[in-house]
Length: 110
Image (cartoon, rainbow, N blue to C red; front, top):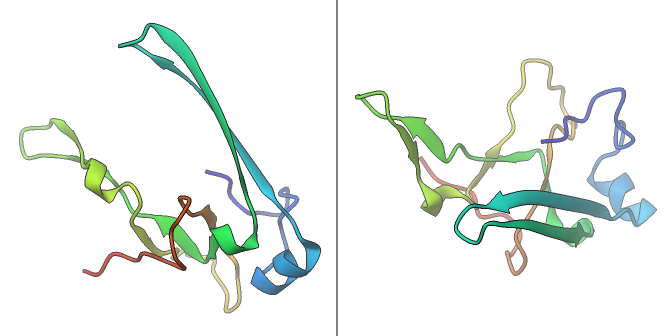
């Protein structure tokens, strides 16, 4: 996750300045697929319509009562408001790229 702090080139931008600048985010992922015994690489780009400001992906991994790690793949695209101890009104917080085809924001309700 890219934190937007004073060292980030995205620092100081909000949804409006991001749109006015016509910024695009590029995300590259490299991983090893054990089943295929192969290196996997992918790159995606995200424009202003693909980013949810002030949101973060919800946790999809938890620990059960017996100490086992549980990954709930059904939660991978859930978004929730980013709440930080240093957030101020209008603070962009995290910028979350949305999966292709996602309309606006798919926020999980508690």
